Image 1 (cartoon, one colour):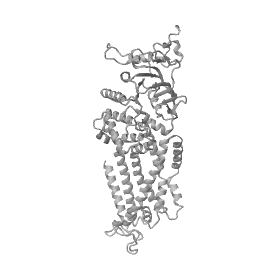
Image 2 (image 1 turned 90 degrees about the vertical axis):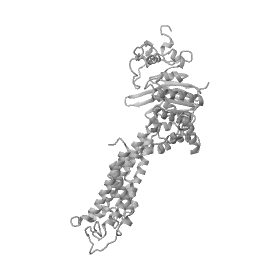
Image 3 (image 1 turned 45 degrees about the horizontal axis):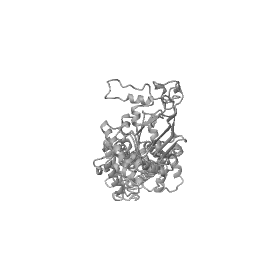
Image 4 (image 1 turned 60 degrees about the horizontal axis):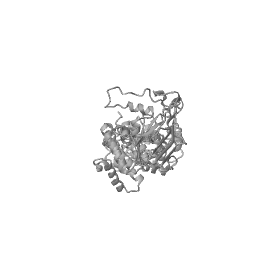
Length: 268
Length: 327
C-alpha cells in the first residue's frame, strides 16, 4: 500500500511538472542566457540546478525534458499495449495454428536485441521527430505484452464463466471484450506501468548515444551526454538530468509494484 | 411422440499422453418434450462430456466427436449447425446450468450485466426492456430483492443465490430443454433441496424438458421420469425411474443402489462396489463392468449390446438375455 501511494504521488507529481513545464520553467529551454558569465555555472538561487555549457538554465531544460520523455514513453507504451494486446488476444483466444504462427513470430522478434533494431531504424532518419520515436519504440516494445496477454486469455478461456457465456449463446467477440478483457486488465496495467519506466530509460539512452531526439531539444539523455565531458568540473549538469531519470524510473517501478500488490491480493 | 432431443451413437474421445480416452462411447438416449431424464453415474463415467457435447462446448482438440455421432434437437442436426444457428441453440434451444455456480459467473460483471447480455443475445430488446426482463427472471427463480441483486456482483451472493442466478441465466433464452449438470453438488443439503424443487417447478411452469446430470441417485429418484445409468463412457441401463429403483436390471445399477447409505435399514457398513473405475484409456474388453461385477460369467468377455428388457427398459448385460445354458 505504501509503495502504491508513494509511486502514485511521484508519478502524478512528474506528470504535473511535465504538463506545467512552460509555466514553471524560469527560462525558455533553448535560451542561451549569457555565454560569458553563465557557462556551466553551479547551482545558485537564480539557477537552482545550475546552467549547462551553453549557458542554458538546467532546471528549465530538465522540466521540458520531462515532457519529451513522458510523452514518448507514455504513448509508446499505449501503442505497445494495443499491438501486444491485439496479437495476444488473437493468439490466446483462437489458439491452434494462429497461436503457433503468431507466438513463433514473437519468439523470433524477441531473439533480436531491441536496442540493436532501434539503432538501425533510427539511423535511417536524419532528424528524428517525437512521433517517429513513439512509433519506433511502440513497434518494438509489444512482444512481452503479447505473451502476457496470450497467457492470461488462455487461462481465462478455460474458466467456467467463459464456458457458461458460450453455453448461453453469447458471441465470441463479445465474450472477449466484455468477459475476458476486464479480467486480464490487472496484469497488463502493471506491465504497462513498469514498461513506461523502461522506455523512459531507453529513450534517454538513445538520446545519450546521439540517435534520439536531436539537439537543441532538451532530452535528458542529451543533457547527460553534454555534461559527460565536464563531469569533474561541472557535475551538476549530469546530476540534473540523471537525477530526474532515476526519480522517474523509480516512480514508475514503485507504482507498478504497488499496483501489482493492490490488484492481486495473493502477491506478497 | 417424437423426441425433443435425440442423441444417437455419440462418441467422444480425448487424445492424451496416456493414450486415447474414450470418454463417451456410443451413447444414445432421447428426451421427449416436457420429460425429465436423469443421467446418472459416478465421476469419470462420461456424464459431463455428454452434456457439453450437446452444445458443442468441448474444445476440439483435445476432444474429438466421432463423425458417426448424431445429435438431433428439435429436428436440427446439432453437430452440423453453422455458427449463428449454434449460438441460437445455446441458451435459446438448450439452457445449461453448471455445477459450482461461483466458477461460472464472471467476477467483474454484475448480475444484471450477465442477465442483460444473455437476454439480448436471444431477443432484440432495448437495454431497459432487457433489464426489466432480468428483474422478472430473478423474481422467477425466487430471489428476494431482484432490483438489488441486479446491481450486485457474484461474490456478494451466497452459493444458493448464485445457483439461482445461473438458473435465471439458463432460462433467459426461453429454452425448450434445460440441461442441469450436477446443479446441486456445490451446495449444502438444505439448499440442494430448494434448488431441486425450484428446477422441477420451473420446468413444469415453463413446459420445458430437463436433462439432469447427477451422481446422486436420490436426486434422480425424486425428479426424473426416466433414468439412464452410465458406466465407463456407456449407457448401461435406461428405465422409467420407478422401475429402475424398484428392480435394477444391471448389476452396476444394483451395486449403486446398494451403496447408497440408508437411514431406515439395519445398522451395517454400506456395501461398496469393489475396485475402482478403470482409466478411460484402458477399458476392459467385453463388458466394461466385468472386473468389478460379482455376477460376471464367461459370456461377459463378449461385449453386451443394449438389450430390451421389457417395460420401456434397456440394459447392457448378458443376464437380461438369459443364461447361456438356458438359451
